[in-house]
Amino acid sequence: MEVWGEGRMKNAECRITGTVVLAGLVFWAWTRLGADVQEVRVKVDAGQVVRTVAARVFGINTAIWDGLLDTAETVSALRELDVQALRFPGGSLSDEYHWAPNAIGTNGGTCPTSFSNFIRVATNIHAQVFITVNYGSGTPEEAAAWVRCANVTNHCDFKYWEIGNENYGNWEHEKNSPLHNAVAYARRAKEYFRQMKAADPSIKIGVVVTGSWKERAGVLLDALKQMRLGRFVTEGYQGWNAKLLATLKQLGVTPDWVSVHRYPQNIGGYENDARLLQSTTWWTAEAALLRRQLQTYFGSANTSVELLCTENNSMSQDTGKQTTSLVNGLYLADSFGQIAQTEFNSFLWWDLRNCQDPNANNSPALYGWRQYGDHGIMSGHDTRYPTFYTFKLLKYFAHNGDRIVRATSDNKLLSVYAALRADGTLSLLVINKSPGATLKAGVSLAGFQPASAATTDSYGIPQDEAARTGTGSPDIAQAPLTGAAATFPCQFPPYSVTVIVLAPLRGE
Image 1 (cartoon, rainbow, N blue to C red):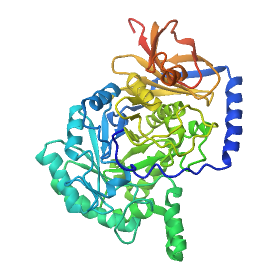
Image 2 (cartoon, rainbow, N blue to C red):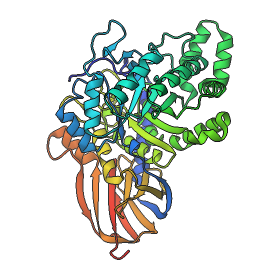
Image 3 (tube, one colour):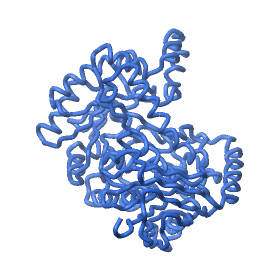
Image 4 (tube, rainbow, N blue to C red):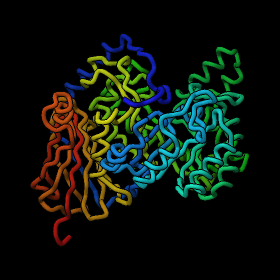
């Protein structure tokens, strides 16, 4: 596989512990719970619109270490997925990357993929673009020159630019002083804003925020080790977001957007499939928390600040088999469904291609047959993981401009989302999180009268097994559905993602 580097250092050494036994017991209990569940009540109200779908929720991260990015087969794969947004240059290396020489640091050598390569891919598929400029070892001048190259010289109209990547964390490369400090970040960000906006006033610039105090744990531990108790108290009490936003307000800088990353299974060796599949409800609480914080510091001006997710996956490092399993594919679909109901206006999965890691948690307590992990949805020229196919299913569910409508399920093992599409059809995105039970749902529709004939597109255990055995098709399965009505029954096999498209009854 033609990849380079460690890709934001998300493939560290294995830390499998005795918790595997506990994870196995939880997995067994989860299986038994799923096996006993049969009937589920699903309600969809097509008249209750939650929000309009944004193109940026169909996004993925690309990276400088992906030597196959600027190829016809990659462009073909991105078109197959109907990807609408791309991010570059890729994770933590963004804070070491110098775009003009296409190099990491001063002696890092040339990266396999350059900004020119990325331009060709992004413009070829007409994607909206997120660029992460170098805060850790870069300058505002370098960032402004990048904006000019993209939008003045090459007329790319790349709209979304963010200052650094995860700069709240002590894993992030940084040469500034003090390190990983919210006040210092805000003060330097002001100059980035000034120079980058001077290069192109139309761009939207984002700042890095964190959704969890745990992401600051390393900084707090560093303060304790250095006996800097004052910093430990202030960092622990106020945290990153409060000091960042307060300082930006004092400096007269209102960001255009804030950048959030989400990795719910973030300690290698402690992965748990059931817990991962119930973690997606975090998006609603996070959106509410960030909006409250923005309102606190910016008052009425907070409404002009967008909430954007620029990275999401199950693990940020120590990529064991869960990342390449069907479970992670289910998580991707469910995370998308949840975020599409909030005010987050982007969903960018981490990432297109990364690196296969055989040395992390490959415990039999985790579902899946691949004895390695990988953040990518694909590897090399032709290896595609379940995350590739569940991402592909999203284009059958909704498009830019469609409307998400209210959908509920009375069973936490069956997630249901609904979209009223511009062509008049109603689509359902259904995720069965039970590893062993076919869930029978009674679907009730309000505000929409369907024709009896419908279509389904699905991905699950049979397709994943086809990839393992080489027998059958590993791609999405398509099938007709008959008997659709205002109330109709439908079955969903274990560990599956299904999209149902219902046409309106003629004359409606």
